[in-house]
Image 1: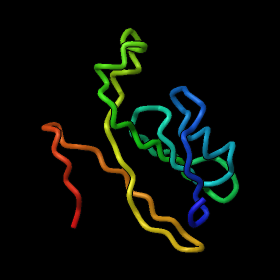
Image 2: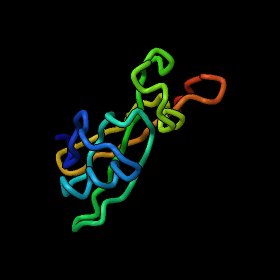
Image 3: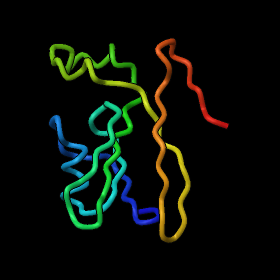
Amino acid sequence: EFGGTLFGHGFMFNQMATRDHAEMLRKSCVFGHLHRVDRAAGRSLGAPVGWSIGCLANVDAMGYARRNRSTLAWQHGIAWGEYNDKNCIVNVLSPTSDGEWRFPI
């Protein structure tokens, strides 16, 4: 936990898993289990937000899921930001369609 935001691998999977993680944990959370980039607000007290940060693996090499349509939403992504004792600012970055990572500076 950093600045009131939980970080972990994640464990749920479905179309609304990003929202579901935030609602169940009742805290903002960042995780990578879904292999797709997503942000969703949880419908709970405290207004938690969930971030799914994608993956950095070679999607073509993951043969176990090649027949699942959900893999079409898989995307590379990374999280970056800053935190203090009370707050955590999360930003998620994905590469351009050309595969270039464009970090704001």
